[in-house]
Every structure is written in structure tokens, then in C-alpha cells.
Image 1: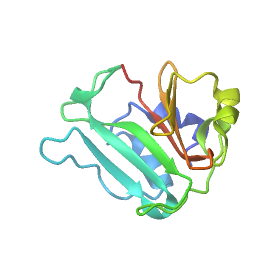
Image 2: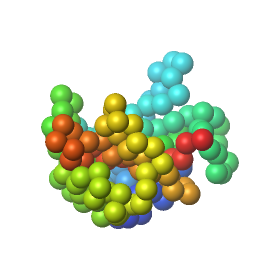
Image 3: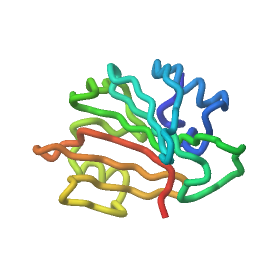
Length: 154
């Protein structure tokens, strides 16, 4: 089983590597990432488990930290939905970094430090770390409802 605290290490790996196959299997994601013509990203998910993963064309990465084979689709983002949406049931498992759904923004700041970006209109906060970013989206009652990790942005 993929250790949630090691999930950030999977970012930057590409579809076809054994670690990605294990991650997808662990979360019962059976779809293959596929890019539509002209797109640079494709998603796969397990809607019943509240998890979605985005794969990006290696040539379109903001930050390249390694070489990739031609046409590689790189795991660039993983999102966990803490509430039911039109497309997803709530994710009920553990989250990376010891965060929990329902946490307040202040509780996340206490745990993760000062955010790099706080978008009040979207009710979304981002923390930047050396090899990944963390996103939290908050609901109407200021509790975290969506949590995501992704490759760094420029």
C-alpha cells in the first residue's frame, strides 16, 4: 500500500513506472491516463473513493527535475475530496502530512507554515515546498473540503 507520507515522492514519476502502477492499484484506479488532442493533461480517478490524479505531458511541465521518455505522462497532481460532489464520494482515508478534512485554515498554517498564496475568492490556499506544492480548498464554514498535492509551479 502506498504510504501517504511518501505520496509526494510519486509526483514526477511517469505512467508505466512500477511505483505509479502500485499507486493506481492501491487506490483501485483502473483507467489509463489519456490526453485528448491538443490537451497537455489527463485525469484518472476513483470517484467512489474520492481521489483523482492528473498526468501531464512531460514536455509541458513547469519544472523539469529529470529526463523522461518521449510522450511520457507524468503524475503531476493528486486530489482528495473530503465532501460529496457531483462526481466524487468523500475520501475517508488518511491524508499526506497528517492533515485532516474539516481542519481550519489556521490549523493548517500551524501544521504547514505560512502559505505561499491565499486566494480568498476561490477559498484556496497553497503552500510551496522544494519538490511539491500543497493545496487546500475550504467550504462555506471555513473547513478544508479538498486537499491536493502537486509538482511545483514556477
